[in-house]
Length: 83
Image 1 (cartoon, rainbow, N blue to C red):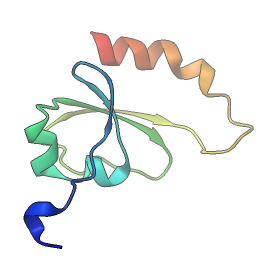
Image 2: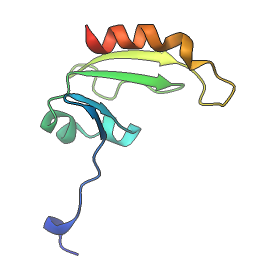
Image 3: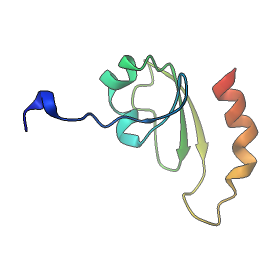
C-alpha cells in the first residue's frame, strides 16, 4: 500500500475541539499541531509531557487498574479542560 493510501490513526473526537487519544497521539507533534491542540491532560502513571514547551499539560497520577477510583479526579479534569 502506498503512503498516500494509508489511513492515519486519529484520536477519537469527543466534541468539537476535544479529543481522546493515546500516548502515541500525544507524542505526534505534527498531529497535535494539525488538530490545533493546545492543552493535554495526562491520566496515568509514569508519563511525562513529551513537548513541555509546546503545550500546556496537566497530569493526573492514577493507576490504570479496575480498583482505581478515577471519579475523584473528574472535577479537576473538567476544570482543566474547559477553563
